[in-house]
Length: 120
Image: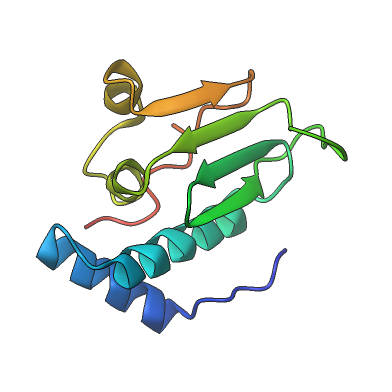
């Protein structure tokens, strides 16, 4: 398991500020995104799926075949607003896919079973 870089206190504080503001400052959004990516990696450990939230962060998660070079076969990419909404349960995976807010490739690139990470 990767070492957490954002404490639970800092992460939940950033999430709370984001939830209250609706449109939080860049530093708050970055902290909330990275905290939830760390939470995802902890709850769904593995290296078979890469989740990208540019420009704020990336993590690998979900058990299965691992890759060692180049772009992994299972990639999920989404913007920060979509990631935060999914991770806190304000948006479902199916809704986000239907709206074109998620780019997901590969047979394991579906995070329905692990989201939401928190409720807010």
